[in-house]
Length: 331
Image 1: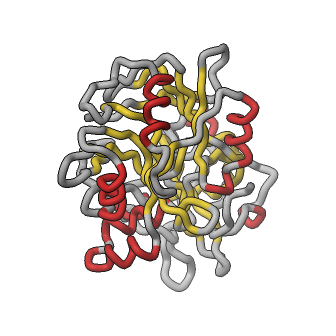
Image 2: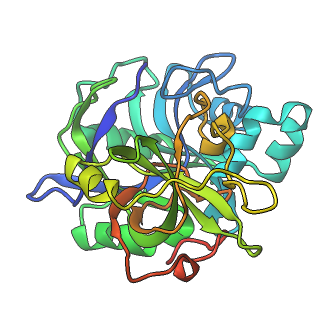
Image 3: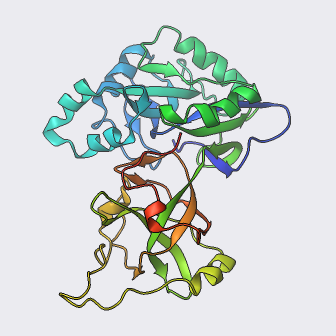
C-alpha cells in the first residue's frame, strides 16, 4: 500500500481541527502484519525487511495478524536520531546482525490502516484511527512506540525549534477528520525546521550566466574546500543577480596555480541519497563568494542531505568567515 503523503508548507496551518506530530529524520515504512512474519516496505514499495529484521520480528511478536501500520524507522544515537546509521543497514552485508544488536532500530507508528479483524480503516477519520492505534500499542515495547501527537500549537511550535537537537526535522500537521489517501498529498502538511547559515559557492549547474543550482562547500582545517550540499533551483531573478558575480577558475597551470578542489563530474555518492543519482556535471566557480542559505536539520557526513535554499550573497563576508567544514548545525 502506498503511504499517504504531506504537502510542504512554511508555517503551521491556521484554524481549528488540526493535530500535530513530530517529523522524524528516518525512513517511512509500512508494516503488513501476517501470520508468519511482518514485512516492511519503503515509501517507494521497496522491501526493507531484510535490512531491519529486528523491527520485523518485534512487530510480528507484538501486533496481531491482519494489521497494517504506517510509521517511521529511526535509530537513536545517544540523545538524537542518526540517519547515517539507517543508511548503513543497506550496505552492512554480513555485519547486519551486529549492527542491529549494537544500534537497534525503533519503529515510531503514527497511523493504523487495517485493524486486527482485517477491517480497512482508510475511510475512517484520523481521530478514530488514532484511538484504535493507541489501544493496539498500549503494551508494546519501547522500540515499537506511538508517535507523539498534540492539538496545542504552542507545543507544536516548540517541536519546530526545541527538538532540533534530538534530530526532529519539523512538524506534520494533519486534519483531525482526515481520511487516509494512499499515494496522495492532501489534508496533511509538513513544516520543516529551518536554520540560517553560510557556505561558499564552488560550482553551479546550468551556465555561469544563468546558474540553475548552486554547489556549496566549506573550508576544512587545511583550507581545502569540501563539498557540503546543493541548493534548490534558483529563481529567474536569482539567476540574473548571480550571473555577473560568478567567476570561472583560471586554467590549471602546474607549478603556478592550484586545480579546483572538486572532481568533474561530481561522484554519485557525494549526494548521500538512498537511491544514488548519476554523476553530476557542473560548472566550476572560483570559490570566493559567500552564500547565505537556509537549511533543514538533515545533516550527516558534514553534508546537507536535502537541497538548501539560497537567500542572498554576503558581500560583507570573507570565505574565512564561513563556519568551517564539519561544524554542526547551529542549535
